[in-house]
Length: 131
Image 1 (cartoon, helix red, strand yellow):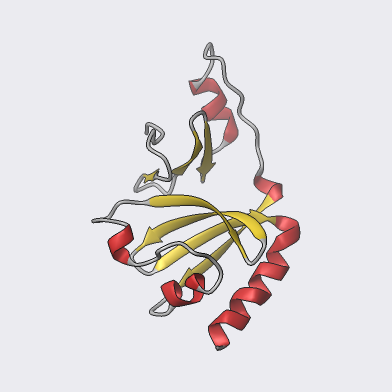
Image 2 (cartoon, rainbow, N blue to C red):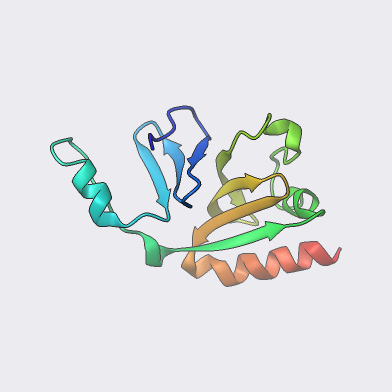
């Protein structure tokens, strides 16, 4: 699987691996062991860093997912903002917590946030879901 080269996009395989574009030369790889990735990049000027313990994945899904997330950020979360089945990744600050958002399916978003912010963001999302 080749990494995306367009801003704020992602690619995913049926096997569960996903690659989110973070910048012109930076990606977040989800669901792949580090060793095979390092082997694939052998001889190429690159760095593979395992950040597993630094991030938590929070999933927001269901009929109200877009509504809940729109309370925390200024992005357009409608399906129209993600044409077809295009996967998108956004670097955003939701409720003052820097994170990466991936629209994994029509009504399913995954937020990758620093571990220390996860409890706060989870509480914030719970509160947004109530009102």
